[in-house]
Length: 272
Length: 282
Image (cartoon, rainbow over all chains, first blue to last red; front, side):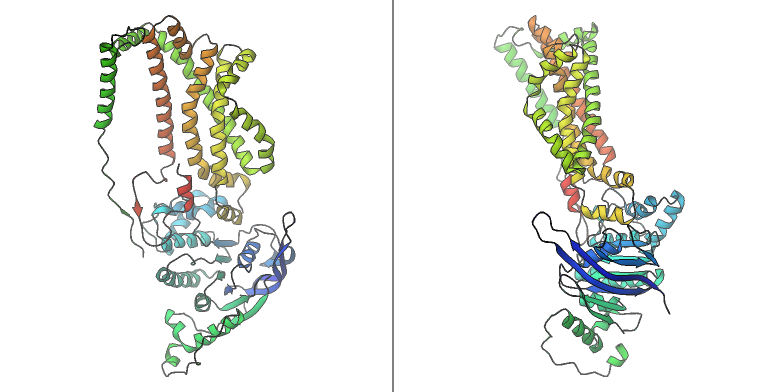
């Protein structure tokens, strides 16, 4: 029985309106818990407060009401147990690949030699050997996002927060990054919370998909993804995956695709 | 795996010879006008006469003495301008309230030409080096302040989130994020300030001074020693260009991460350089 790492209780966030602007409620009485080692995806319409949720979890934004508990302690301010990946790789352009990965360790005052060893390990882990001294401007989008992943993991956080990390990548790079992320998750065993716009991405990667409604966001659906691991990209062409996707689409308020429910075919039992 | 960075062939850089040729033609024209127009040397001396006058002034120690004074004023003034402009620019970038408080004075100090305030400073601080340094500070601190301010303000919010999420303290944000991010803008301010600092010192020396290149030019003019005026002006030019080159050199050494002009590095798909780099490049 895995222990609970993250516990969100009655979380409400309201942005105070400036001047005469009315207050803007973003999250409304949100409660859920995440087990240690789980991979959870959060889906929701644009502007529903998914990014706000991540910022609260990272301790960047205090909740208006409610509490967030991380590893048995309430979150008050930034957490060293959290690593974050942003939509844009968000690399410091004056630092090399290695320099960017070193940043969290420098901020946390890890001794130089130890930090460099650890950073080199991370470079190898994300497959960027030989690019240690490359500047971000010379990296492709996929490579930059690998560096961002390495940077988020270098200080060995317990919780990895991903804010639409692959949204700005082209379709092919995104698919290769899915595999990369799963591989990292298998070796590192962090708890992952990923905000995404892609139903496929959510279902293919996560153990559990949370669907948020439009602002102010409430939990619309808490779906366990019963697909076996290791996951494979081909799984998304199975009927089982299709059914799950339909369920998520319905929760998001999207129209059901106008086609008959697919009949199980003999090879589904093999692939799925 | 994405493609390795490839470097496109640069446009062929035109040879340095063109510059040398251009200067040579200019000197020849000067010489021709001075010679063929029949103007007396106190109106327009030839390059040869200026060179001879310069050599004399150098031998007698006159030129070096005045140059040294002006150089001191420029360097001290510019340094103080940096020490004043950069921190103030940072403070104003971080606080809209401070910006409001200081804005009237900053705008006023820039609306009035320095030449007009200079006599006041001379009255208050005397004809010595102090007043020249102050005029130089006044003229250099504004571009330094504004560029630092814009540089700090241009740091993307997401980068602050990154540093904050790591639990960085105030000084760590300054050291790891704000200073390196604002450095390109700061340097473009410093380039402007370096050239202006020479203007500031000479303006002060023109009004009242005991020594300095401004005084040298002023006195030479009084004696119709036009060749010496030319010597003074050319020395100022060398001073300003030298200062500018020193700033450029420091900039190139410190900002190696910046995209160099005319060199396009093309990589695989995805955003190549963050918009930040483009904005920061002057």
